[in-house]
Length: 388
Ligand SMILES: Nc1ncnc2c1ncn2[C@@H]1O[C@H](COP(=O)(O)OP(=O)(O)O)[C@@H](O)[C@H]1O
Ligand SMILES: [Mg+2]
Image (cartoon, rainbow, N blue to C red):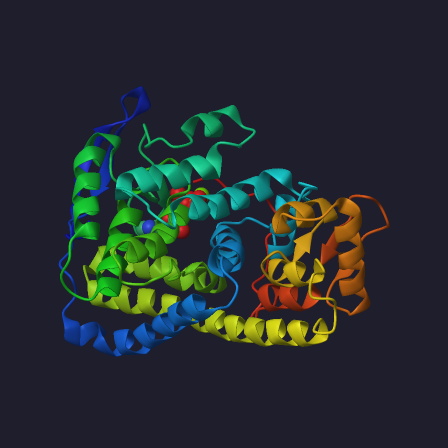
């Protein structure tokens, strides 16, 4: 086996000895190997960050962009819940084509909500995200794993290995490996995006939980960058780009181990974050234009009407029931809010999805279109999320 890191024997169940990988804490790649990629990525991430801070409606990152990231980061792992499915699941209807799948995608979005304003220590944050991903799993085995480090070695297929498997860090080595990862992650020195690229590589090679390591690791990136003050908002996502090209992402992680070339891995990581931020920057620009248009359309409505509270709320909750809207804007009765939503429907801002009923879903199709559409559609495998 190749010499970047070491392999440590671990006695698994049944006395079987497996060679578990112990990644080194790699040095940051030399600046000249990554500056060009960094130079392309940093302005896009910063522009998206600034656009979020300047956006006239608060909460847009959590309500829309983190939800989109949850959909894509989970989609990269086989989840089939779409952005609209997630909103519908999180509405008062709590309805989904695949409730188990939607619950775990929703868990990733809720983990972001819990941690975006303060994530605490990296290991605690990783477990908190993991808990959200698995605590509603109907399989008691997986529900019992929620918020816990792995107790057994885990592996992925690896045709290059003599056993056909590559085993991540052994459970016995986890405390030391995680401590090294956490202090590297929170240390300063070098460009922060480069440090977090290497931190992500390290986390994925430790693979500290039985499942969910990809989703947990990718969500940590924006949270850590925000916690360290590198961005004002937790917004440096990579899920969408990973979903578009999972193969490139996984091969680059693996090649990092085989070659020890953290420069090559970091360039891929930077490209993934730049691509995701670029798509999001385009979306937030269009979202602002949409809001301006809605404000113009509703400009002649009486100034004390609930319509004016609904406009910004719907922009960040583009699939909702009347009950959700009453709770969301925090004023009015079912009847008055229903009337105001009816006015917005008359103006073409929202449309009713489904048959007339007290609890029906309304959607804002123009907002949904921004978050559902993707220039590239990856083929969706229609199976529930696979476990490691
Ligand atoms: N060969 C590999 N070497 C290192 N990391 C890998 C490799 N293959 C996949 N990964 C990482 O592991 C993740 C999948 O691990 P898993 O625990 O199943 O997480 P999730 O359930 O969120 O997908 C991938 O998203 C990637 O980050
Ligand atoms: Mg998995």
